[in-house]
Length: 424
Image 1 (tube, one colour):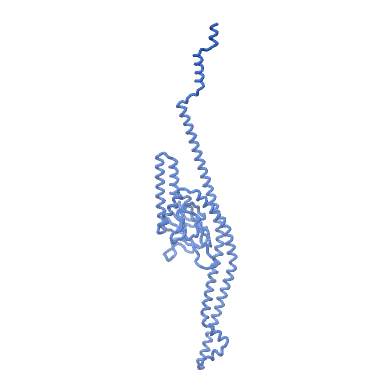
Image 2: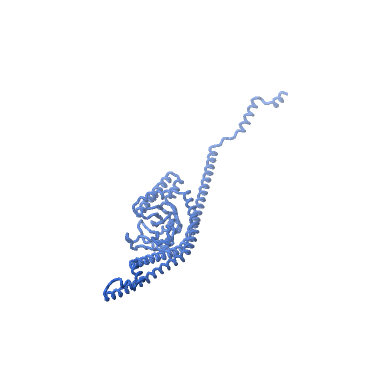
């Protein structure tokens, strides 16, 4: 009986031990150092994977943005090429109108000169036509002198008749020029209207590109703008290019030094960014003249128009060191090569000036524009619009504006004729 009672009830000590054991069994096990290391390694792998995924996503976005920028640049190039066909029609009509206006001006000047010659004789001619006998008898003279007077008057009459005939011919030439200009005017107006419609679409694309450019600028573009500001203080065009090259080399060396320092400090992201900046400074984006051996024939004619001054022709300042084109009113100027605009601003007597770094030490200079469509630092492709020529009135003869084009290598001008595409 006592043994059975002990089996049914636990002693206080046994009960305490049993409860303590259950509590210990319910507590979680503390992680060991190996488990903590594995957990840290897993977190590091996840962070690395997330970083790689983010890099891939950023690279994909950059590639997509670059592809989209290329597509839009191709659209601008195609629109500019289509517009150039309309500009050629305008150029032909405007040149014909300009020639007729010069012809009319010359005919009017000759007519005025004939009229001025006859003006002093008009009173005598009028009196003789109304009172020939009275005019001869008004002066007392011997018969011989009177006869000589009659002969002289006959000679004067013949001269006056010839001059009157020439006067009528000049008047007829003036009337013909007026008629020709009147017939040509609708053709010019139609060509200008077709050109204006295409130009409006191109302007829309250029404005959109400028907005995107302003929203997304890179370090190379920032450098180009600062370098252009410094170069604008130069005295000569050669000085501008020398200053730009010196600034570019300094910035390139700085980027190279930053990349090396970042690599020594085991900072791959900083090193990669510095290398990209160095490459952008060392080689302009899309520099199409970087390969010197394949350079010939790789420049696009910058404007639709007529070459009016060739390389080496005599000028007041000596032999020409570039080409001069006369273009239709408000013609679009396109980049002759792919590369980066290193200067786009007014400069001295050149007016609005663009300098394109085309790679391989080659620069193209464009001067005489009325409007700039790019800024320093912008990357361009060959054939992409970069500006607009001044407008002028084909009905009024005068000095037509011209686009001045230079090709420079190593800072010195060289003959660009062999570089221009034959199809241009």
